[in-house]
Amino acid sequence: MARTTTFDEIGPTLRVAVLAFEGITMFHLAAPLLVFGEVARLGLDTGWATSIWTADSRGVRTAEGVSITDVAGPEVVADADLLVLPSWPSDLPAPDDELLHLVRDAHDRGTRVAGLCLGAFPVADSGILDGRSAVTHWAATELLARRRPEVDVQAAALYVDHGDVLTSAGTASAIDACLHLLRSRVGSATAATVARHLVVAPHRDGDQAQYVARPLPEPGDVGRLGPTLDWALAHLDEPMTVDDLAARARMSRRHFTRRFAETTGTTPARWVLARRLDESRRLLETTGWSVDRIARSCGFGSAVTFRQNFAAAYATTPTSYRQRFTPS
Image (cartoon, rainbow, N blue to C red; front, side):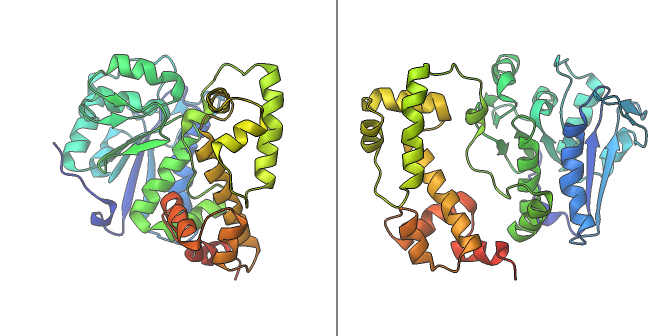
């Protein structure tokens, strides 16, 4: 088992090696380049270097028809602090022995390994996730579980990080995962600054369950549930139980919770809490209200309960969040 290396142990220079292959989509390749490159572009840490490499040291043509010619070869992985496999071909071929050995050797040296989206497949195939959990795009979770029964595939998570190896869910979750890696390297404040410049959430709530294709509820139930959700959004400051929402939707509790999960991908309680936290962030950013007033306006029983839920969701306090996101 390789020694787990935290980013704090690496020092001021971070060398990131991102694998490219023929037919990779530009988004998958760009996600880690954008997040990690933004650190240097903003002048937050100029010691970072990101390289694109290919197995044969030759350029590739992306799925969109763009040629990427300025690439390195596998040798750059030897000096990398972070090895990123940002995707994998959609037909999910087995990696060749050279790539598997490269991933294992890098991991054994203490290089952090990240398999983003379908990039979780070659990482899992290398064996470094055996006996551990991982995630990939929701449409491929069952296939990964069958292909690598030694790996505990988490179908819902946006990303799973073991410190030495990370995997992420589909497509845009790569940005979430890279921002998480950034936070572990330089802290929440810098990661939040990068996120704001990229116009993305510094920490996204929920999981990929909300994006999984689901059978649509019957039209009548959608019509009955929609007004209930609208009402809930307009009354976040009021006490609100699952039974209250079910009664307003004119459904039994059991039927309501089932239809709610099919429509939103989460439970009523988690949905209400997320909406209350969304509203609290809006008020922290746009008003000078006290934390007590915001807690009451968003339906939290007390400022203490509000602070606890806010910290659990965003790993920061309401006051720190306001200082970070309110223009000076």
